[in-house]
Length: 346
Image (cartoon, rainbow, N blue to C red):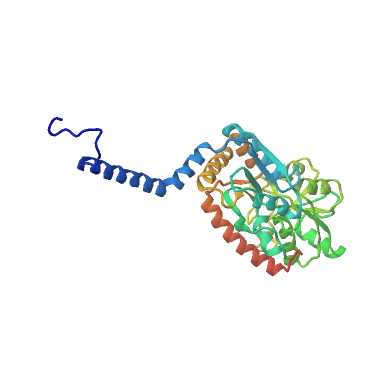
């Protein structure tokens, strides 16, 4: 056997120094890769999820009946979003209980971003108005508030009152009038409750499962008064089928500049109706960010801007964080209003 050469068939006594060094380097590399994967794995997974979202149909729950402002605008948003993301966005009307039935559906849906809610600030009123709710505000993830509407007090043309003062006098004379809202606990309902309170009248609330059925009832003479948002009421006002009495914003709307605010008769009176998008709480932040991007992109399209402008609405499109902060403020604000009004729903 040549000197310095090991017989390959003979016994081995252990790894050489070079082999031991290579093994240590491999161990260090493996530990580095493992630690990196441990530290960044969840983040990388979330990014990968966001990069592939969405991959299927989205469901947009509108918790009010077809025909109202929420339904009309919700369908416009769904069309524009579907065109952008390349997947259908199906509108699912789930009316009832002032929007609570549809809201609960979204609160209980999988937290994957495929179920959206397009609702109003009734969601901020409900916690203080209802004795029992099957969801909490924290069960929903805010995406964006998209529009802010004034509420219009309208009357059937047969009602012998053209101003708010005349209407209040008529209500006192008759022991109250009937007024419709989009549902118990809605901003429209609360506007009627507050008007009763400040004017000292006893108008009777008649809830509907959305603005469409409510406006139809007033136009048909089934109700004397209604409190739709300006967007929903405007076509009927222009056609002479509804008489505008007053508006809930602090100032007149440029859309109906001759209609005075309720605050002109009762200083300090101001209510509004906003529309916004939510998804289920727990949805990954990158997914919420994608939804926010698509909602705002749709909001900026000419079709949505025209509809909102013509309906006297303010276009918003705030961030999820800004919308969450607004929700916190509104829940506290409406809790005070509901408490002062004495309104409660079991």
